[in-house]
Image (tube, rainbow, N blue to C red; front, side, top):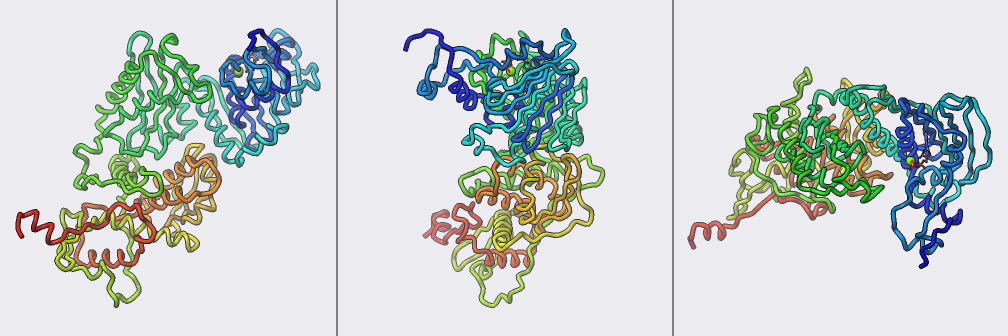
Length: 598
Ligand code: ADP
Ligand code: MG
């Protein structure tokens, strides 16, 4: 290929634009917001209709553009790398920067209004599919307004990939949240279909901004971190109490030199800092800013995936680990696996993971959630003491137990360490993990109720008000029917708050709020419409967990009998091939060999 510079044909540029820069309405919002911030705006309004598919409007009070710049910013670039459609698709180079506006214009109906302080009048330009159709003077204040309508109107194949409004606005809110966290000194608002979703006034402190964006109640559980590593390396922000963990990384906000970055090294270091404080499968709430000499980090490794390359990975990693660890230790939070407070499951044995579907995480999460729940209650600063999840509500089976099932016919020997039930089956010794057994019973019951229509619910005497972050809230809004089928009765309560009016009957009341949050996180992580089978299992498992009988709880003889009866009622062999063992059998022969007999 000859390397002489050529101007790309217009239609080809459009393809580049559509493919590389603009993935969805949230990408438009990101580019426009970054431009507004670059222009020194102090107030930025984002107005969105129809999940951003119909309209994205960003209004700023930045420096604006003069007439020449207003036209120029829609202009295209020249390159030596491609000259035909074929070249384009065999190439993955960078170098599309400075192309945001022309790219967005190419796949939308774009109106730009801008005025700089030097001119008395502003300019308005209207372009369709990248072609300027109208332009003229307008009287407007200094600043810039960009309206992007009908995204992908001229590329229907791409339009088809856009999700439901709730999903798209969730992504948009995420972008606004990230940028607003990084710029407390700028006022941000987000309005969807005329309804205000985010309103963050100008603030001087990060914590105030976090309160406005992620919910005030969270603030009590965040501690400020500030650490200087020398030579330009600095870390500051807020780290969350391990008791307010989440089931996804959705509340981990990390910034490098002011840019939102989701870097693997940084994430790993963070979790390492939380090690032994946070259970497996749980993630902290963290808002952290890393400052580093720009010469020591390459932020252009992946322009859209938020990855960076550090010159000295280990240095950065260890700096973060130590900073996080140090701030968490002296606060007196008890590690999960060392010691433990009196409500923790200190005596419970390490449980092997029970996998459901293809994901090994959720079942570990069951145990973890419960432990975390125990800790949350212990640390909870709420005025009224919350109860631990009570015993699983196992109804004595109404059917007359005439023909005894396998479990009911076992001879009960007793209980070991208040965690295992010991029985005899002929000559064999049977050990039953009571914690696993209850989990399993709960899971199978929920599953059968769900498949028969809906999970049995019960109304709460006093609705609980739950404040979620934006993404969780949007996820709930998009899945209210599914949640109703799962036994949750939820109503919008303004902003991102929800009134929880009914919960699955299986739950003890105190567990509901955390469960709703976990379920919302689970659904939000799903990101698409519809509850796929795997997510359903995870959710049912979470529910079973929140309602289950703890290990380390002594059971009277009749309670053991009831447990065994219930085990006979659930048909878990048929449904759950991957289950963690509920029962272990030791034969007389095995035991005799153990004692070198026979
Ligand atoms: P880049 O941001 O990489 O320069 P863009 O296509 O996003 O490329 O923007 C092109 C140019 O248009 C910017 O460099 C800036 O000069 C101007 N511009 C865009 N948005 C604004 C805005 N909101 N206020 C002032 N100038 C803007
Ligand atoms: Mg830009």
